[in-house]
Length: 287
Image 1 (cartoon, rainbow, N blue to C red):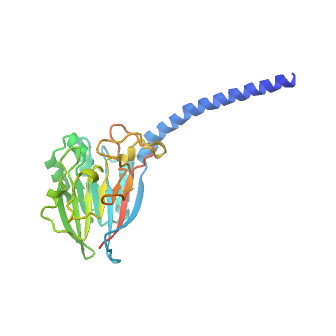
Image 2 (cartoon, rainbow, N blue to C red):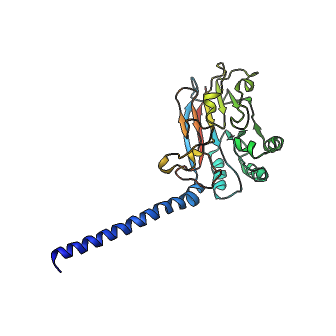
Image 3 (cartoon, helix red, strand yellow):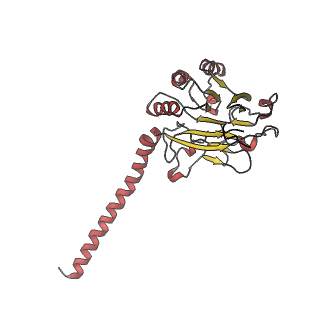
């Protein structure tokens, strides 16, 4: 075989190998993504920890707050077991459930099981999400369930408690999409507190719900977005109405400091890609 023919044959083999490799990549990358999105990421759990301070914080006054959002509970599986373990291991002072705990009314018994296994010592508060409304979960049944486990359901309502010798106010808004959030009604009879935590399921509430100026907010917690739920390379392909410009993590621009949790479960499709379920822990230096 001549040198030219040999080079041509080698080039042909190289091109065939390249085409085969390209075909494997074309098939393998989507397949790997599908496997990850269906069977890996949805069952992982990441605990993120964040430090924050109220105005003029005191070095001896601290509060540990855990946020659980968008559980979309259908069963107690591996993910939910890891979540319960994380709640116990963190030894929180406060646990807040920021909506969409269930998205089917007949799953309340799963929620009862989950709440029974949650730490009983911390103060615990809950708000509503859009799915509790859309699924037709009876408000009275949900209130009774939360109350039976010592959890306060806050729907345009505000409560105050004392922690580390200082006053903490926690305000829960109604859901933006399913209900009618009203911060003025929630705070109508409240006295301003040096530490104020605001709960709202939809992060867009930060832009559209007016907070009385005499009740400044030190921390606002939201969920709803699932971090995009399907967010390859961290880029959310779509966000549900009520998200606004918010996806996940901290927002400290105009408005109260807000953290948007990626949440725990899934909705509509049982897939998570590039958005790991999240248990959020805050170490709050109180004023």
